Length: 196
Image 1 (cartoon, rainbow, N blue to C red):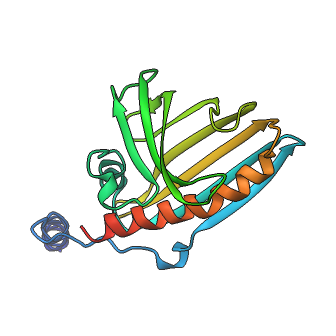
Image 2 (tube, rainbow, N blue to C red):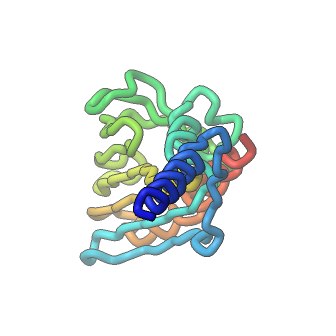
């Protein structure tokens, strides 16, 4: 009887291993639709310091999002504002950033280029922090970040922090002007990743 029980247990154990090790069928990754909503906030940190936070959930792996986000050559094909970076793409390298932004005086779309020192962590985030040439006296700290939620879903985060004073614009003015542009870029990035 003991021999029979051992044989049955061995058979069950063997069948369990075989059924669990059958990797010929790939289980599809399912996106969590309960978290698929964008976030936008402006927080006053001090009287002349405001933080912008935006994020969006993208149905694509963090690697897919990062690859499209950092393909600066093709960025103008899908982004209506941020047109990309040129120069050495490494931490602490000097780059030229190109945007199409509304002119502060006319409101018309105008190409603007800024030279910045890049903060760069491969596969995770990039950004820059320096005094604005357009709004002297105000320092910005702009970050683009990708976080994995699962194998097939990511969160893209775009933040900025404005600090200082300017004769014409407050940090709150700049934060409020940034929110629609950042949300638009986030939505365009999501669309580009999800059409792949």
